[in-house]
Amino acid sequence: MDKSIAGVVLAGGRSSRMGQDKALLDYNGRPLLDHMIDLLEQSGLTDLYVSGDFEGYRCIPDKAPHEGPAHAMGDVLTALNGYDGVLFVPVDMPLLSAEMLRLLIKQDNGGYFMGSPLPAFVTAPPPEECPKAVKAFLALTKTYPIILPPDLENCMSNTNTPEEWEEALRA
Image (cartoon, rainbow, N blue to C red; front, top):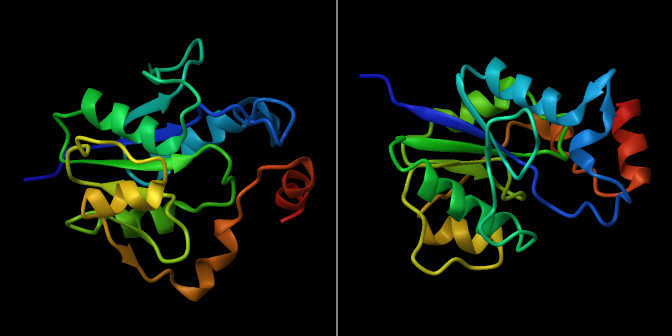
């Protein structure tokens, strides 16, 4: 039996360090949010959602907006409780690859890459008390790190500032 897995782009943050909504940044002529949804699709997922509130997208609004990704992940797991797992990708990691996401999905008990709590594949229900930090959230859901293949390390850059965004665009 195939597992039912949902893909979710975490896009409900304030984007305060960027100075504008990261999800709507232009990435190769399209909103970054569209690029991240395509990436989930390329990894083999068909049930795709956005954590946040964006018109025209299949969204799961945050119950407590701007409380951070761990709270958003808890809200998503509650809303999508019929799935065997949920693959979370942050909207601000445009260099992720479908190959690395497929590697996470293969983990029976979920997983994330050592050194970075996101992206993460979670197969457990949300914890009763949601911590502030994603790593604590992953520990409570018994989601453990796996080794990132060295040839994929350059895919893990996070873009929180205009300078980091410019660097990602040059990659």
